[in-house]
Image 1 (tube, rainbow, N blue to C red):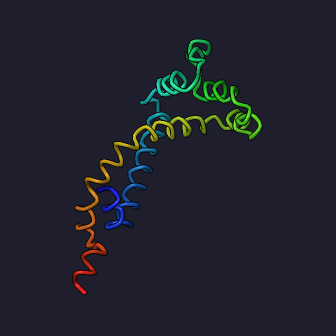
Image 2 (cartoon, rainbow, N blue to C red):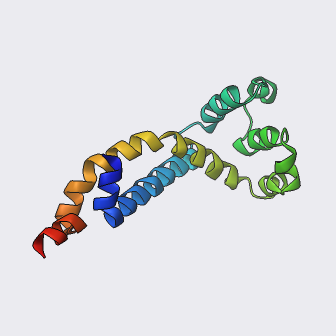
Image 3 (cartoon, helix red, strand yellow):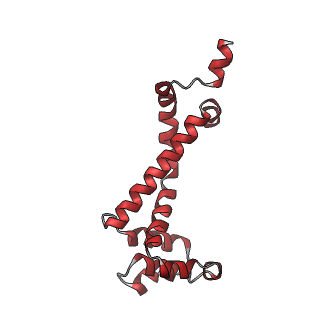
Amino acid sequence: NSYQILKQYGPVFIGTNITLAMTTLGCFYGGISSGIIDPLIIMDYLINTTTSNGDIMEECGRITTAQVMIEYFNQYSWAVKSGVVPMLEKNPHFANLAVACVATSFTKPMRYLVCLAIVPRLAKYLGFIAPTAKEEVQ
């Protein structure tokens, strides 16, 4: 069913999906940057579910998001070698963006379902004629 919708409403589906993703990312980033959303809760969930060392939050205490991200990425040699850690040390606001990206990725299934639900109505509202409808007219 989802493949049919993608095939039938391709550009509308892709545009809607990207718009929902960017809106979600912007809301998370704005919420984290303004202090409405506590990024340490998101990082605590990420750290406790993806690593065997779930004590990073207890070791770090209540510190900045950048410090938690740096501590987390120091566990991985690729992050240190690729320059992720030095970049976070110089530009700590990127840590908020990284946490917002992680939070946005967790919403992907829900965004996909919303996209599937609204695309046919949105396509009709925008006047998009699906390829199957074009073939029937000709």
